[in-house]
Image 1: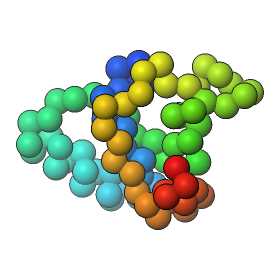
Image 2 (image 1 turned 60 degrees about the vertical axis):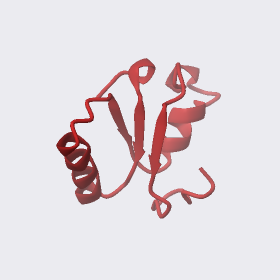
Image 3 (image 1 turned 120 degrees about the vertical axis):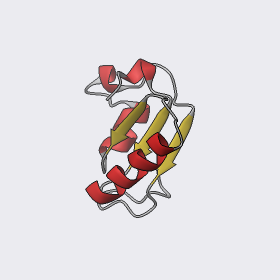
Length: 79
């Protein structure tokens, strides 16, 4: 996992099988970009931080976001 300031690809996914499948597909295509996996409600906090913990905010927005639209805790469309 990368530090927030190194993230190039941000994967919002709550299903471990789908996470592994996605990472395996990226690796198979020789994509060596830094990938950060974030689950559920942590997705919003990762992108925007929180008032209580501003250090959680990403230093630089990711280049690409792969977003599960059916997250359990947060509607992917709302993210």
